[in-house]
Image (cartoon, rainbow, N blue to C red):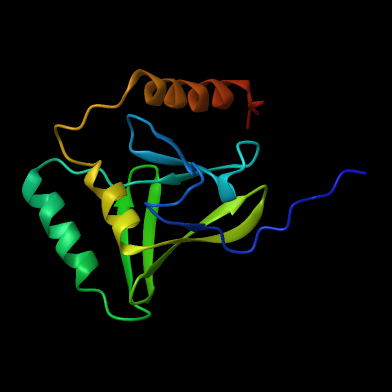
Length: 146
């Protein structure tokens, strides 16, 4: 008997024993293995900056968030909204298998993800393949003429 996983709010810490970060593609999307399960993936838009100053301002803005405040980062492919839940808990909304889900991160994990937007950061070959994989799946989707 196959069971459907029930995913409420997966939590991610930098010092987790499970490998939850699958990679960060060249467009700075974060590929997550939900609850460390390599069969359940979530792709969350990340931060893209053009200068070190912009990165610094974003990190300082994150650190200045009060409880229940949200920081919205606009991107050409959508937006990234980071909500401060408590002292050491930040939430990013996403979809997992079609269901709306809140991904919870500790402060160290969310800051580390944002730091990958540094203009000099170079993705690994494996991370570049993640971007290609997403692009390939987009081409496999049916298109409709209006």
